[in-house]
Image 1 (cartoon, one colour):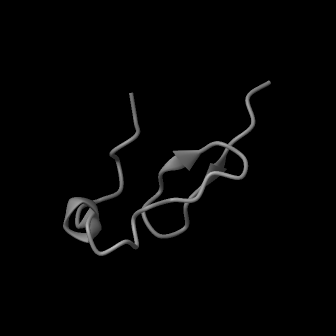
Image 2 (cartoon, helix red, strand yellow):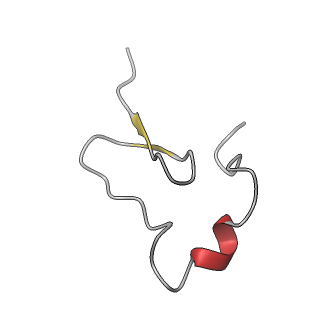
Image 3 (tube, one colour):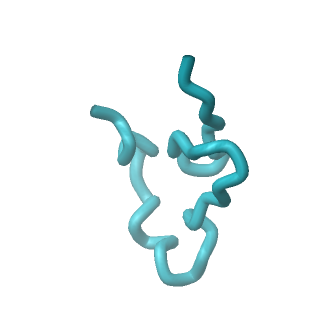
Length: 40
């Protein structure tokens, strides 16, 4: 069974304990879309 959590801001699936970087100044412009960056 895979364990992950979904970022409430961008919808990214992250490992337990991993912090999403969607709120960092460097990557803010990369997440201005519908949040499907991690879907296969």
